Image (cartoon, rainbow, N blue to C red; front, side):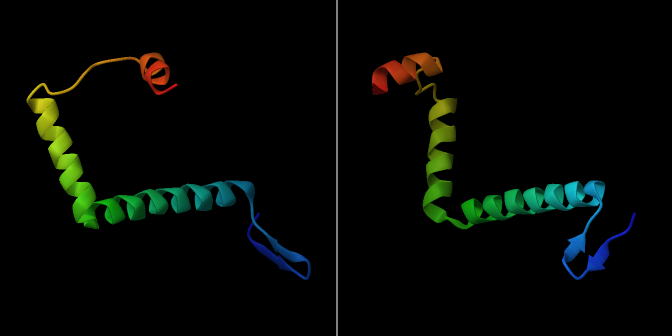
Length: 71
């Protein structure tokens, strides 16, 4: 079945609609990545975090431990 334009609206086959949603989500992810990469402060923070990990300047813990600390 192809796309059908009717007086009440547009009928789109389910597979085509799912493909459109997947494409939209992928584009949204790409745009978010570009926004992050263009934000100098965020990129500096990411770079600093990478350096801290390389230097062993981090604490390993579970999500439960983090929740306990933040409660």
